Length: 165
Ligand code: ADP
Image 1: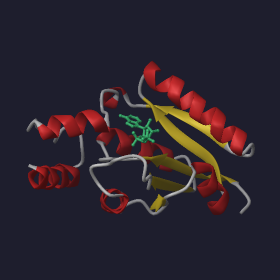
Image 2: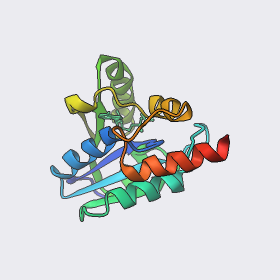
Image 3: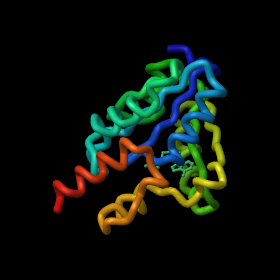
Image 4: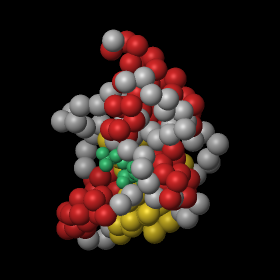
């Protein structure tokens, strides 16, 4: 499919979705006619929630946005872009430590598909500490994660942790 500059994607693991993710998704959706939020269905990465569960959470949280489509995808980001006419990949960056990894990833994706643009969006200052991995750890030790994730995620995390204990 021909890539459109008005169609963007935000790929990620979202295990679980945080307020930082939602902020970057909302800000990206305001810039494009259509935004795909693409939940990685990666068998190599062990996640607390299945790709289906992560997609369902994001769909529910983002249901008010007519131009956002949440999907799962098992392949490469560039393959999804090619199949869906995506012209722009957006990645959020929190701090300098994110940048090295994101830059290398961008170089790889641009090499695989030279018609794709990759944009980095800085986090909002209030969310720069939010990381899914830290949230999972805090929740496992019973810390209150409600200031960091949407209410639905607080509930899903609570249920999952009870199940694991
Ligand atoms: P991945 O495993 O692909 O890095 P993540 O779920 O950790 O997936 O992140 C998905 C996207 O959201 C990435 O671009 C990441 O940099 C961005 N992101 C994660 N947390 C934040 C945050 N607090 N603020 C802004 N962007 C964030």
